[in-house]
Amino acid sequence: MTTSEQASAPTMITGPASPTPVCWVNGSWTSMSEYGLTVATQGLHYGTGVFEGIRAYWSEQDTCAYIARLPEHVARLLESCRLVRIDLGLTASEIQDVIMELVERNAFSGDLYIRPVAFKSRLGPGTPFGVGLNGVEDLFAVYATPMPRRERLATLRCGVSSWRRTPSDCVPARAKITGSYVNVALAVDEARAAGLDDAILLNTGGTVSEASTTNVFAVSRGVLVTPSLDSDILAGQTRACVLEIAGDLGMTTTERPLTVSELYTADEVFLTGTGHEVVAVGEINGRPIGDGSPGPTTAEIFDTYRSAVLREVAGHHHDWTTKVLLPESPQPSVAPSEGVA
Ligand code: PMP
Image (cartoon, rainbow, N blue to C red):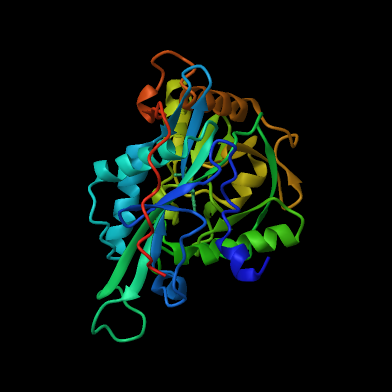
């Protein structure tokens, strides 16, 4: 296989229920293996794009998927778009419909990760070559890939990165801007090179910001602490759920700047994010957190979050998930691609 064949091969989507995975690109359904992009794609050059990461959980009992925090993810996507002047030309509810249809059309019957991505594509007529947001066409695509839930609570080994989180007055941390993930990639690469699972980044003020793609929580003297929104963090959907769960469970929670020494001395540290859900941190920079294994609060939050997104308890946070019904019969064939490449 040549490099270009590898690049266009649908390696990401291999779910058994989806032999010919489809994605949605600027209004058309197209095959994952057929879609191509021009090397002149502006978002590729300058990181001028935005994205979301959304999870759908498959329910054997209801034989359907439930998408977690769908309206909230779409609202964050639209906010990110506004920051980089991307106009999707769709309302929030139309975007939700596209995402639901994507799951339906692919007839996946397992847990999924859904990736909406929007970026600057071609220079518009008369727009000079170079960096810019105006006068550049926007492209919006959505695809999905299987992502089975972990069987049990995982424990990660982390390090505090030498790379600081990009300050929000340089690139807004509240938005999921593709270019800003270079910051994360450098930190993850450093952690992995040191044999660790993940990096915790400090902000330029020297307090804890977040891990590579998760928010950080510490349990200290019976209080659940997480960096406040002014700590250059993404306002995570999972973070919001965990704060609500902790409140339900009668825990005291605080959102405030958090220092590294507080992490080192915490009874428990855990991370939250759509993909990872809730994961324990067993050590940071070689220092064990507690006894190095997941603590009781982390375990309780993990269990409660899981049971909420899986709708295991009648009426418990069912508003966090949106039901997707699979089609009774296969969808009609995929529309030809618009040939944006
Ligand atoms: N921070 C960063 C930088 C992320 O990329 C993510 C993943 N979206 C998170 C935190 C967690 O956010 P969420 O819970 O919404 O997935």
